Length: 78
Image (cartoon, rainbow, N blue to C red):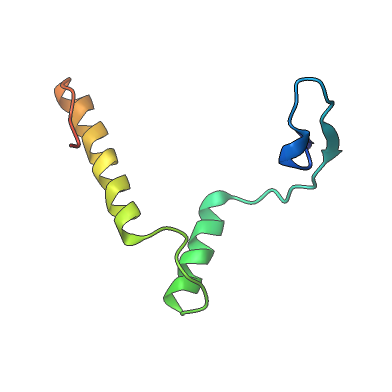
């Protein structure tokens, strides 16, 4: 992957060139990685990456999307 960035916040400027580089990427199926992490959490080897509250909020959004698609209505999460 090609990467362009400023090394420090002080360098952020329209008038300075960004540093250029490359990063080696490991291509892995994200579902496999997620399930491996889930198993590590169950075994007590890792902590969850998201909170229970974040997971619940995500589920509420997914359910609202499904309901909106079924009904054609706008679904409020407020």
